[in-house]
Length: 312
Image 1 (cartoon, rainbow, N blue to C red):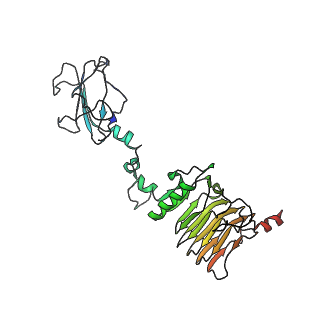
Image 2: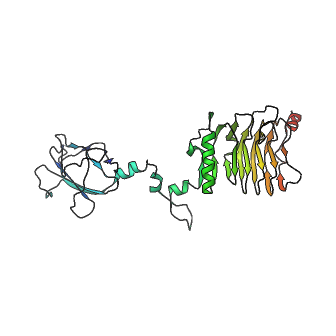
Image 3: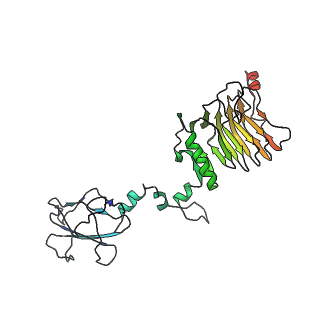
């Protein structure tokens, strides 16, 4: 059964033409338009009991009036002495649908009711829902980024949904604690730069493992635990490239990991650019097998822990 919605005011109160409460007045409800086909309103939100039509107002000119969210109404208010249908009403108001909009927008499908069109010639109309689903936001899956909560499950769910939809994952500013590795199998993940932080809490696994084709990590800060010895698989790097192809790692800070901030294990045709590694336990910015085929442009911003210490 459809849940009914309250009318635009929590409780209707009506007045006559002299501004006096319309005690005993008659409120008629019709289907919107020129006709006089009566359309039901209801006594409460369940929609189980229709009001009388017309509704007879109480001594203060009030009534309970719940509307069907799928319908559009016409209301006619008439004196207590008027006929049915009314011949001398106080007023008529057509196309009443405010309750559909006010509550419908807060429903899970509410964003599908709002239109969106980008500026510029040739832009096409879409719904706000379609626009907001261009990428997947980890907070839409329950990640808090409060620097305390384990956001592992929420972020993993977001990555899985994005992969299924062929969309990117957006990580807004925040400090997201996590207890295991996130695997990007051909998925693009991007943040807001240094303020989008993944903080590892287990001290064993890498933060991000890249596999498949076309995975990317951009504009994020990854923080490890800087403990030893090296254990776990994949290794405890910031990013562990595991036999990936056509990958991109760009604008990523990797801090306090046991192993190299970025470790390439069999990745090919990748681009590693503009990244920074600080205080790697093994004092290596990046490790890669000699047979790997990828382009790296890291010298401008990348430093190992040894280089950083010498600058002090």
